[in-house]
Image 1 (tube, rainbow, N blue to C red):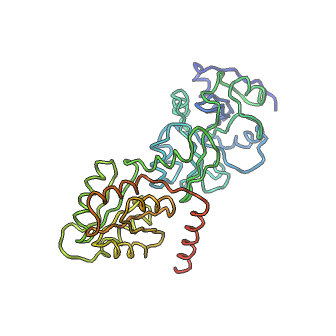
Image 2: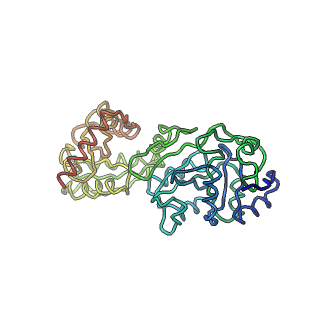
Image 3: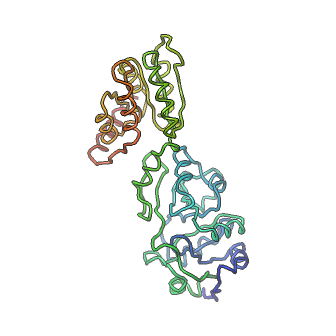
Amino acid sequence: MNMKTERLHRQDMNRVVELLQAGKIVALPSDTVFGLAISINHIETIDRLKEVKHRQDDRPFPVLVSSKSQINQLALLSRRDVKLVRHWMPGAMTLIVNKAQGVDSRVTSGKGTIAIRMPDDPWLIDLIRKVGYPLLMPSANITGEKEARSSDEVLAYFDGLIEGVVEGESLLDVSSTVIDASSKKLVEVRKGPISLNEVKKSLLQGGNMKIALAADHGGYQYKEILKQKLDEWGYEVEDFGTHSEDSMDYSDVVYPAAKAVSEGRCDRGIIFCGTGIGASITANKVHGIRCALVNDVAVAEVTRLHNDSNVLAMGGRVISEETMLQISKTWLDTLFSEDERHQRRIDKIAAIEKLEE
């Protein structure tokens, strides 16, 4: 196919919208690199998009959106995914998440996941809004070749093969970071301006985490003190009780707190009883929970670095208030090291757990 490729400019917004609404391919500058865009409601154009890019595999193209409401229409977001969207979008982050029901399988190449990005470019956001639909927009290059960073480089690849190109240069020299968040473990699919470590650190920031708290009568006072501190530190808290110093059984409150972490309704849990022993034993009966009983600040750091513990148990009668707060802060602030040997051991624990189901 050979056609005349229109040279357009940002001020030609209406013409760009007209082309996209008619199912045409237009090369657009973005806040990362140039992309080849088609409107998602003209999915029949995807075969031609693959043809001009010489794309042979079945990997789906990323979808550019203009709002978080569009993301909600396309994706099934976990609590963690919502945090990532809130923190990194708009921006140079493409997030692979589970797709919502009703999304055309051609958009995702038949896969159960969808790659989504919200560009940090007001012009591009406005364009998507005016088109009325998200855009499928892979990088503007022949597959395997260097991504185009200017309209001249785009034309060197696609002059006469696409309907339009908006002249100019992209804002960055690198493509977006691609993170696969479709399972429990975040995976860096493509390196970009945002590192995987930065992404993980963003999940630790107070306002992005929900903590399950639970204590029996022996840990009630410390739970109440920590609850106030967590609020000051910016964490969201769900308090599973107890709510007084009246004698009660720790399992009645620890189990539902641990279950909330296991099911992803809370990100981590902090639990108390008089010694922390009974609380930790109870929590570790719940599938997927790695509860650490900690009486020392250094151990609090190690159990996050080495064990990726997701529940912290402490004894309300065996450590001081100051130590309890230091342990809690250290444990919350420490990332899992992801060293191969530590991940291997955690995987073996999970395999044992599965055998015992």
